[in-house]
Length: 112
Image 1 (cartoon, rainbow, N blue to C red):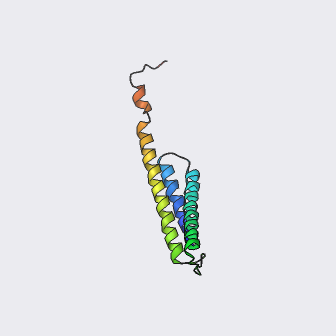
Image 2 (tube, rainbow, N blue to C red):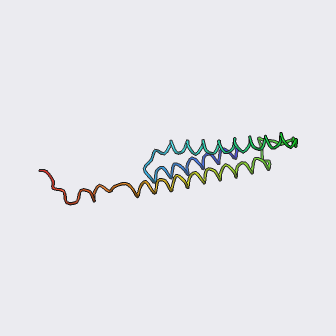
Image 3 (cartoon, rainbow, N blue to C red):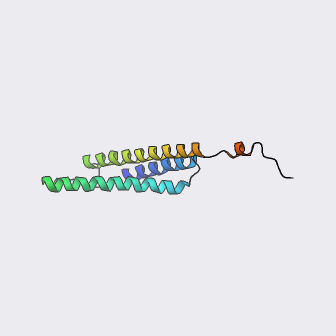
């Protein structure tokens, strides 16, 4: 249940970024969901490999509030946050490089 709330928050966070820079909101929302789930899966795979190598098969409840789930939530939120800031920096650089049409039109004669 907690992951659903995190996914909704990530979707809205990325949709706000897309709206601010004139991009398509739902595509960036879905990107946020994919990033979150990707980081969750990557963390749990690494944790599963750690348990397999160390032989410490604990009776973890992967559907509730366990320490592993909380750590994986923080790991995934950190990944979403890092990618968000990378995209934001990229969009700011792109917006600086865009030519401003009004400035280019100064001095041109209008054809009547």
